Length: 190
Image (cartoon, rainbow, N blue to C red):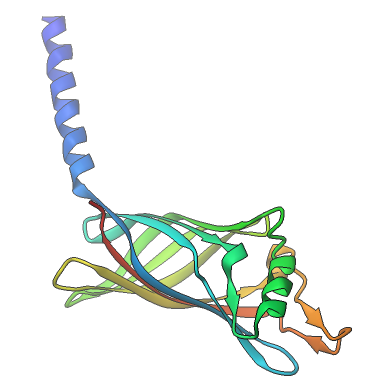
């Protein structure tokens, strides 16, 4: 009888695990546009994220997990290779070539006709420094099941022990705050 109870419990446990596992859907990036923008005492600047790896898991029409990795060595600025080099030096890419984000919690704020607002809290690692951040994203699904995630967040470079870059013997100074604007389209992984 005891063996039968254990067997019964294992069957129930297995069925529950299958249901939980199948309830999550895996997504990968189909396309992305991520722009980092800032200003200096002379001009505004932008940098495009070229190399992005990102995956998401959805459960009950909301993000259950989100992981992102940006190759900081491939950021391309609007001001050319000298600015690219300054960014890479400031981000310490020789020692820390990747920027990481991993969500810790995601909460659906609203869902109106497929337009969702999601708040997320997670760990952002830049230049070897990890900080917990929170921000809100807008999500919209299309007829083919793709999900577009858009929004922006402000980041202070000094929060990550990054000294805002300078040039021209200090005549050009960049502002501490940068804005990261994103438009990421996810598709179900195959």
